[in-house]
Length: 83
Image (cartoon, rainbow, N blue to C red; front, side, top):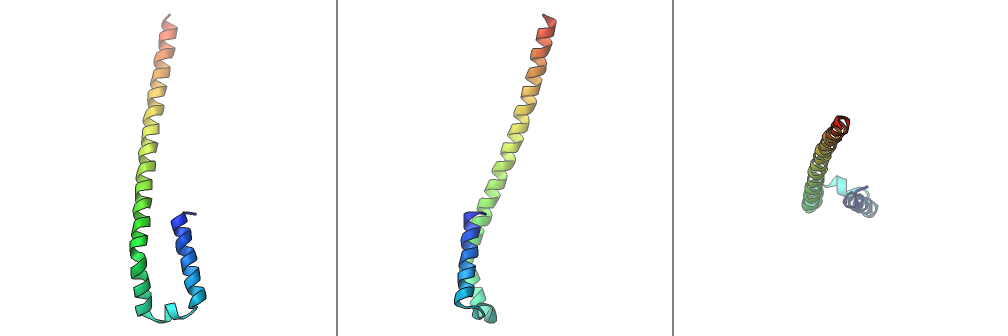
């Protein structure tokens, strides 16, 4: 599990232990607590987006490398057959 998500889960569990009903009974309290967590959530989403972009770029680069290696292998094979 992502360490940020694990921290968020632990925080929410702690809040529920401290105030089992009061968090959900008061909509204004929920808004206040969620607004404090909003920058954290946005940071996690941004990190996830960057990770996805990096993984996609890496996968695309690996595809290009594999294709280049395949073409080089064919070229080498053809040159050995010519000799």
